[in-house]
Length: 147
Image 1 (cartoon, one colour):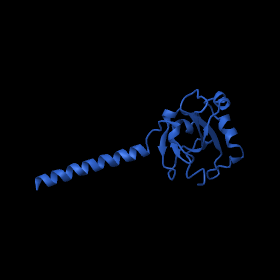
Image 2 (cartoon, one colour):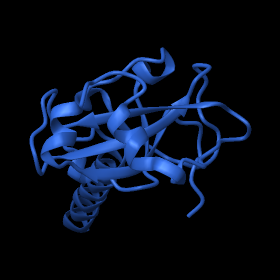
Image 3 (tube, one colour):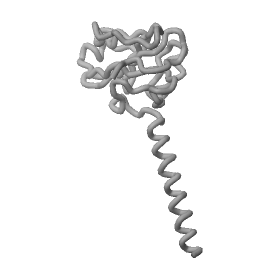
Image 4 (cartoon, one colour):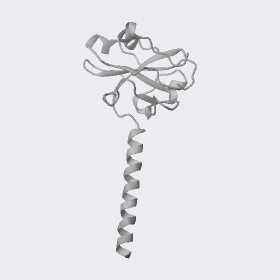
């Protein structure tokens, strides 16, 4: 009987550890732009200040809850785009890539666009994630993009 209880306790502890790992991996840091897709939501305090965060500052967020920014698109940079990229707001490479598709809105909030690459000096073939975030420093409530 004691052995069965001990086994049950070990199984329960392992199940809790796995659950914690799953939650942390879903809401953890973003390691690379390749981990991001259109419509993904993130938090980063720099967005709330109207500033450009670094990739290491990003953590995944649930889009159904208030969040700091949302991925509008991911651009595969060509040589000219990589050379033109500057880690500042608004990001010209993202603005150009959005073109007429720039119809995102979030409950009437004015949005700014920021582009984040894996490095401060991306190369031809690298990816750039283009984010929308609120110009007024507020968190976004709801989705920017319709799926």
